[in-house]
Amino acid sequence: MAILVYIENIAGAFKKSGYEAVSYAKAIGDATGQPVTALSIGKVDTGCLEGIGRYGVSKVIEVNTEQLHQFVNQAYAAVIAEVANSIQATTIVLSNSFSGKGLAPRIAAKLDAALADGAITLPIIKGDVWEIKKSAFSGKAIATQELTTPIKAIALTPNTIEAVEAQTTIEIKAFQPQVSATDLSTVVKDIVQTTDKIPLPEANIVVSAGRGLKGPENWKMIEELADILGAATACSKPVSDAGWRPHEEHVGQTGLAVSPNLYIAIGISGAIQHLAGISSSKTIVVINSDPEAPFFKVADYGIVGDAFDVVPKLIDAFKVYKNH
Amino acid sequence: MKILVCLSNVPDTTSKITFTDNNTAFNTAGVQYIINPYDEIALARAVELAGNGQGTITVIHVGEATADPTIRKALAIGADQAVRIDASPRDAWFVAHQIASYAKTQNFDLILTGRESIDYNGSLVQGYIAELLGIPSISIAKKLDINDSQATVEREIEGGKEVIQVPLPVVIGTAEGVAEPKIPNMRGIMSARTKPLEVIQAMDVPALSHITHFDTPPPRGNVKLVDKDHVTQLVELLHSEAKVI
Image 1 (tube, rainbow over the protein chains, first blue to last red):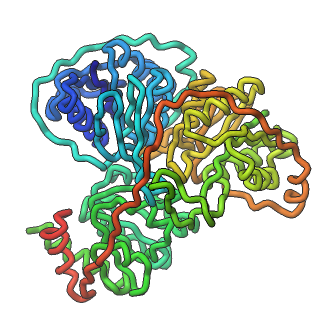
Image 2 (cartoon, rainbow over the protein chains, first blue to last red):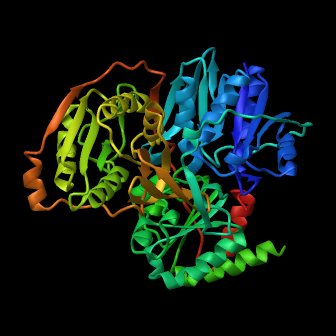
């Protein structure tokens, strides 16, 4: 009985969602008395590996095989399953990130494990049966899933639990996996970074704008507001469909679902499809010139006013706040 | 090239989501069903790739006969033939087994799914199928090209994208950017009526998990309005009341 948590890295540094997964695994470990082992695959700075100790996990397995320096879905899934077997893990935790979504079903299939994908709560443990909640119908509902298999896999939705610090010393162990050539047929040719800011799925604060902005040339103030807040920028579907903003910024039912602490919607009316993607945000602020915009019905705070008037004022106000 | 496109039949994006039987089942009353929007992207790209006699497209759906209109729509958009595995699509594990078991008999070069379904928001079927077939999979493709026996795919990663090359056969989950959904034309609609739709018996698959019940998220609202000339007040509220900055 043991818990294995896979921590994803990007360019050698662990991702925020990876630390969240570690904290989540630690919480299950504390509740069930099982030891937690973290797994890192790829080339990760030693400082980063040691840093896992800050989140209360004392064992890290490092797989630093050269063939695995780039992400290869099939091979990574095989390695995670192999390590899970080697430590007799009965619980596998990973982030339901873009890569995690590719890995989780493959790992679960290899281990005959039930999979809770997109978990938003810790499990309620009733002996061998675990109950976990996940978002369904694009945020319009919450489903409770029961996992009944001896081995369980959980893919945790980013930004739903906070990484909690609990300093402990760390032991790093190297592991040499058996990687087969057929698992390595995928080749990464290039990695293109499209933003140097915090990625949208991991952002605590999101500044999002819609058609009310009237044109792509008006996004400067949205970006400025986001910069001041350390936020990611997002947009509504009509905006990405019109090519004003890239598809990866589209938040909503057919785009990305996000759950930041603060979601600021500017010039977005609040169509049901958009609300589906943001409804699990903790606090919602809406700025819209139309007091009847449906978005106000789900907002915590609102300003009725023209974006071109309100946003510059808001930028000034946040600047003053940040300087204090 | 033989392409398989996997279809989910999902409630229209404007549907009101409610539940019945003590919140244990989705209430289908009055709900309009559509092709899962991400699967529509997959199908649209398949139609482009198979154009000019470059290939054939089979669409597959695991579900009951009530989904036939959705399947016919896919045929109208441009699929050549359809297969329906006759069973209630219990969960992703069950669905993936049915599709993989059919795919094993057909030697598809390319298997496409949407990146996720908009009902249960799973993105599991693509990974499960690939694992069951022992072939590569790519979870969130934003661009997809085929050259000879290789696929070149742009995969979404946090804050960027990865350009990947992968040999066929492969399972790919498609997202926005891969293709624009296609609207069937009259000729397509007419020909869809006579295109083959084969119904196949489902295989037995043990359940690993199940959904016990649904809740609707707690209602939000009671918006606190701040005057547009006093935005500092909003900053204060976000700091001291909401505690998010």
